Length: 121
Image: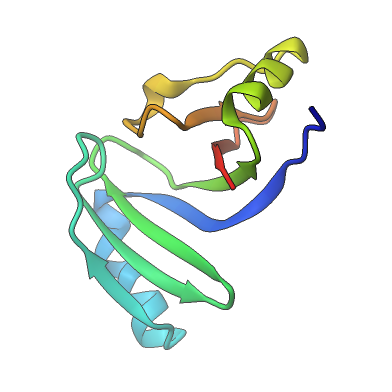
């Protein structure tokens, strides 16, 4: 298999609860982007808003237990399990324990700690 990784359209910004409302206000009221609250059922994300960001979507995720924000990115591949095996052969392990997600996806991280959601194209 040829291991083709492509950037996905989704970008998630994990935001501490204490800064969440001001961050939503910034994107909606200052930058004037289209911002919509989206219902979510997730044990680590208490609420989320989508932000239309050109061809991409930024997800503003409120996380109660964070002290600083993190940006998480999406990677798409033709075959998730084959890509996962390829990554493992290059020393990159999955870190699915960081947040709940469907079984056909995985979380990985680069050496600097940037988190990526690996999913089928």
